[in-house]
Each structure stands twice: as structure tokens, then as C-alpha cells.
Amino acid sequence: MSVFNPVGALISIGGAVLYTVGGLNPQRLAASSEARFPAHPTASGIFYQKTGLGERSLSIEARTYPHVMGGLDAYAILTAHHERQSVVPLIRLRSNFQGLVSGLCVISTLEADEEKLHPFDGVGRQIDVTIGLLMMPTNFSGFDVSSISSFGGLL
Image 1 (cartoon, rainbow, N blue to C red):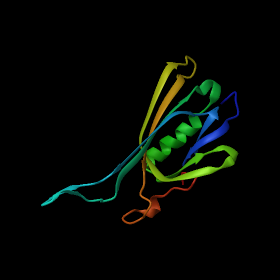
Image 2: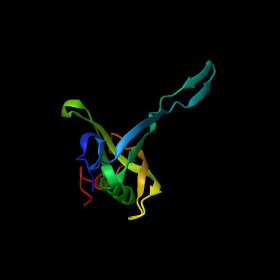
Image 3: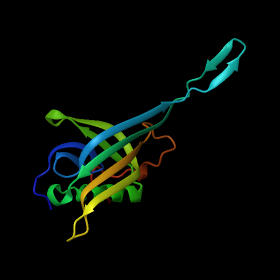
């Protein structure tokens, strides 16, 4: 239960929405990507061969104060997708209701840190969540398409 209605959706991960005000609030995003260039010695020196992109990942740090802002519903959805190893869409929401579809991802790591446990329900008054996303390749060769979950469903 929340005192506020969530406002200003910023990120949607398979139906779990992270908001500006209310709910689970994103604090920091960190992206990582690599490209592979193996070196081959030749008579004239070193030759670097482009072999494609490697792993792309995104880390999101979010925070909520569940007794005031809510946010445990989004955390429960993220936990369910993580445990099912679902492939879900990642959408970055912008101003004027524009959305940037960042592609499909899986939740590779999910960490929660509860502080100052409330004496009545045992839930932390402040919960910090770190979501580690592994971006899926844009082509579907060698990829099980049946593992893709719907936009919001856990079916």
C-alpha cells in the first residue's frame, strides 16, 4: 500500500514499472558492452579481426520506501521473471509518452538490501534493489523464441 499514486514511469522490465515518484525508483543505470577483436600475427605486423559484439549488460539500482511509496509489487514481478528466467522486453520511457524499446533481456542478477526493519510487518523501511540485465542478441539464430514472455504477463 502506498500513500502516493506512482507518477512518471521511467523504465519497464517485463511489466515491472520503475517510477519517478512512488513505487520502485531508479537511482542509477550502468551499461556495459564489448566488441571482440582477436589479434593475428602476420608478416607485416598484427592484424585485428572483427568478430562481432560480445555481451551487453545493464545494471539498474533502484530504491523504495515501501511503507510510504509502495514498490514491492514491481519487486515481486522482477523476482518472478528472474526465477523463471524469462526473456522480457526492456522499455525506457521518455517525456511525452515516448518509449525507447531497448530490446529483449533476462534478469541475470537480482539483489535486495532491506534496512531498518519495521516492527509490525518485518519489511525494511528502505529497500535498495540492484537489477542486473543481460541483453539478448538482436538476431534469433540459436535462440529459443518460445522463452519470450509477454509484455506484462507471467503466463
